[in-house]
Length: 422
Image (cartoon, rainbow, N blue to C red):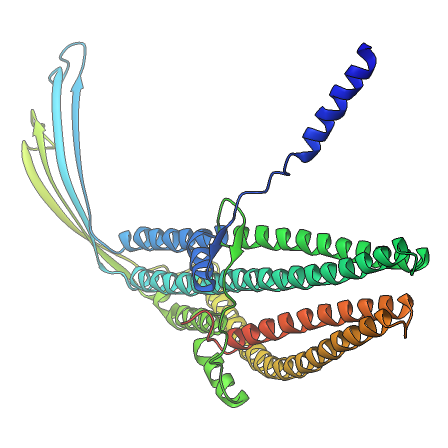
């Protein structure tokens, strides 16, 4: 008697476990488009590294500037010997020294060039923030697209489930057949698999959005952003790109700094003059050093022969300036090409979206007609299966086309320097 009772208990326990609801993942934080971009610019590791690089270059400016400013130092010495010899056993010495460059053109220009490098580093940080913002924006749009894909897949599951339920009911009522039911079940399984894939893609996109925004957890996208407001013509877009794109501005800053460095190479051939002043206290005084006193020196230095170092340095700086000029030309050419490509891609993407939406609309209309005809006995289940598959594919193509338009609009704003806002 105990065995059937045990089986009964296990059966009820298994049923109770099966009835337990599947734990749902915690709700994700929903962020708006602008908020996701703002967080990425502030928290993304590459943006933080760029900000630290600006701070490092500013610190180098302080180090280089110190060589062009006066130096004041104080020294104190106390000496104790085991016994008095020719001098007293205890001696004290203190001094205060000042060293100031009076004529140091090369140091002054180094100071100015270090300030140029700070400007270059800041321009580089802005370019990094642009790249980070673009990454976050694309991740946000991907989440929006994947949510649409999940919506389309769920609609396809509902349609396939209704078809399967109808075929199953017909077979149980003796009107339909097992083949129709099997075909309907196969379509339902395919739609459910597509839904699971879409949910997995959504989870990956949400993780990517969280990473790009510097968040410790995945993020969910809110409403679809408004990416309008782009330039009306390629000429207007090209003009904006040349004036506001951060990569072009970075190239300009690098060229300006390289040219100034090359043009100021003549300062390396000038002499330097420095002032050195010292006041001291000697206790006890000696025959060579009084008890207290001071001295002032003017020191002039002019390097006469350095083995060609300054000549090579000047040539190197000229070559760097020419490289920076070529890099700016390349950046401008790339910006113009990006603008033309963005305008063309947006026009093609909008046309493709119109076609895809019309195709999806017609495919769903055809599906409704075939389902109605199937219920009237005018078509077979194979026709319904084919119509369901066609409608599902057409809806998926429309989702892809929608995402292509959103991405193309973002590309246009980025290519013309309007995203992120300057």
